[in-house]
Image: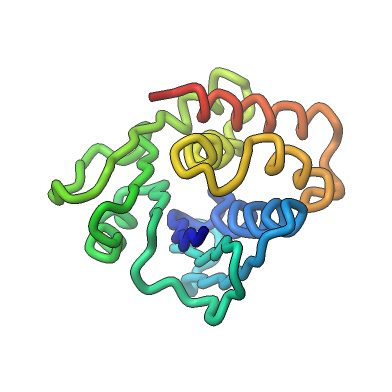
Length: 177
């Protein structure tokens, strides 16, 4: 099993923390993982993306140039990363913020209203968790439970009620489509 992932959006959308969470969940699941962040110059509000590899075999490079899955949290990320998804790959799109649709017909598209889910839970900062839930469901690379178990390790200073909201957003994202 090999899953190369790119996660992209604005700084402040939890892009980097999503990648760290997936990598940590993969480690807890006894998989080989790598995580490679990339920040825009502006940080919060600028662009951010990361590469994550989750594999049953040894990971030879942290760079994911042709991802199996791309998670797109904002409009500019769609244009930038759509061409990189491997044929037959998966693109998860935050349909709350991304109004354009991919032009390619050789990839699977999953629309997840991430911000809407977060707003319904009255926690706007957890939109990324809905996308991760969809990722778990549609790839099978990690279970929702594995990601939920990694949260207290990755978000060490988060209050229990915030962790609970994160898990709810994760589950709602997995329930869609």
